[in-house]
Length: 206
Image (tube, rainbow, N blue to C red):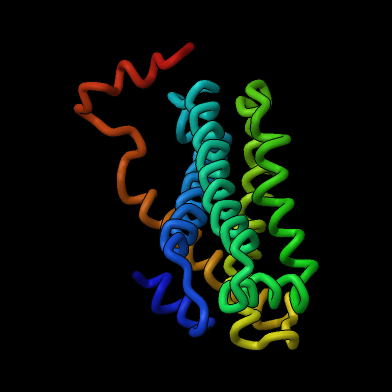
């Protein structure tokens, strides 16, 4: 509901019944990607020695799966609006393609083309460095996606992607996330004690 009130309401003459699910899918794949990247980092520092390549492979599979889920919702919303060609609906994408074309096409490539071509490979999903690189691209892609949801309806053609406000806000929330999450991780053991499935999880393999 926040996606309706905070984002879709910016373009107040336009609406989509898929909008809530679309925003949810983008937030969910960003969350899964962040979990995968934090896991890789903690493992590299020796805090998650019980995490093996199969665990990383599963996290990367979630990244790929929910990227495809986002792609499905994005294409479903775009295709129906393009095919119906109703002026009240088409103006939403026409404005974004005309006024903010470079970020729009960049977002499509990073969130649509990249996961299909790169994250599909099973062997790469076991490599920590690959998960980090892919994760950065996915997160930046969805950051641009949120930027595109907001910018055309608020500032129109006067957008500036490289600006102190955009970079500063991104760095602020990145720093806030790192501080809150890693501070919380220092206050509790990373390995859950007494979980009946822990042994099964540690020996996870294909």
